[in-house]
Image (cartoon, rainbow, N blue to C red; front, top):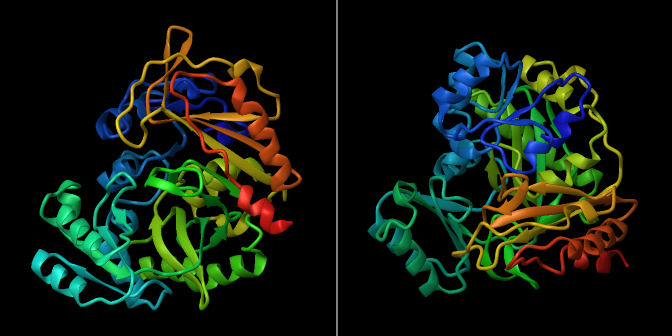
Length: 408
């Protein structure tokens, strides 16, 4: 939204449901992101020229189909195409069918069969619930016992509900992980700059997984040649495969990748912009975002030149104490007005109480800065973070530190 609001073609932005941050850039609409009927009505009533869908839930529920059916141009994949994220079984079968580099694995809908298969495996594995699970559906166990427990939790205890009706059990690949998002209109694929994020809650990649505690872009280990290789071997073949399957894919294709000794392989796909990767990618976009999104909707992406600044970007998430477990909300957020002008703060778990910004979620804010290098951008972020305060505030101190060390 921040990047869209900068586009000259954009006169007014609406956010549903929005937060304290979007209220500074847009008109917040008190409509749930999953209330497709109300969102469609609001788009008509406000003469919306373009809807950009953010969360995976509405995409999986068919919001793009509903809006386009009502004659409203919409950026994002259809319900069928969004299966590339909403069903890990579908994604795995697609990659295996079309020879897209990925981990070897099998899909199961029967717990006894899945358990029997898992017990026969000798190497490290990953257990994935098929459906959406708020980013927690992929479990990386450290032992066979942990793997069996994860499988039982998903398929017997139903910790993810119906999302655990099926599972994917696959080999655990070794290598450095990276995210490469791309714009696509179903024909042309235009990669963005790559980014790395940090999933674990504590420094040193310790503790439980989260939705992401920060990130940086671009990683020094994933240069232009690897971007092009990934485009040719993973991103373009996936878009072509979706078309072959009768599920043409338009929107953002988010590739969660791992750089193995055999080259880049796909770990998973998301059907949308994802944070914190997007927050450290789009600040370096020079081309007006609105122009790109409209080109995707209109099928003219091949006629649009997408340019990047070449800068580095670092973002650090400020979270509520207790996240990703239970946490309290409603604490005032102070100090946002004391930040350096080149620092951007993206709101996630905030809301307005009168004129006061208060916490309203686990991941509360992401503090972002660009620079000529990762080190410069990182220094700006960590200089400004202590100026922001809310009760129980927690953030990692090591975001992008290893990248600086490896670059010398």
